[in-house]
Amino acid sequence: MNGAPDLVAEILSPSTGYYDLRSKYKVYEKKGVREYWIVDPQHKSVQVFCRQEGKAVLDQEAEQQGTIRSRVIGGFAVEIENIF
Image (tube, rainbow, N blue to C red; front, side):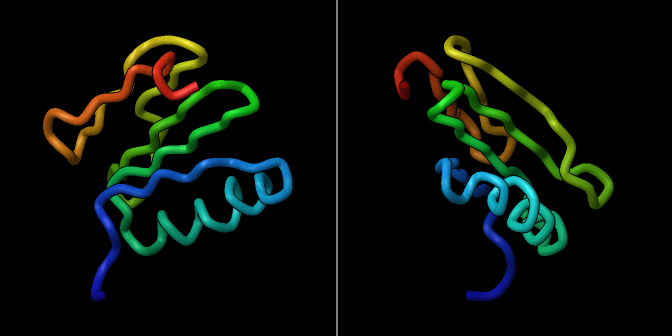
């Protein structure tokens, strides 16, 4: 496969959370991932970072309730209360 995926969804685990939030985040940003979702089951939250001017910038955030919508996959949305 050539190139980066348009969207990556990362589910945090207690044992790899730091790695997921720091190292992988930087790799995804560097490789050009357009949208990066961080799903945190412990806090029942989702953060969405979108690529803007070469950087991953926080675009959306929801905890325990609300709707998160993809910017790169038209029509794709997730109700937070349905995944936790």
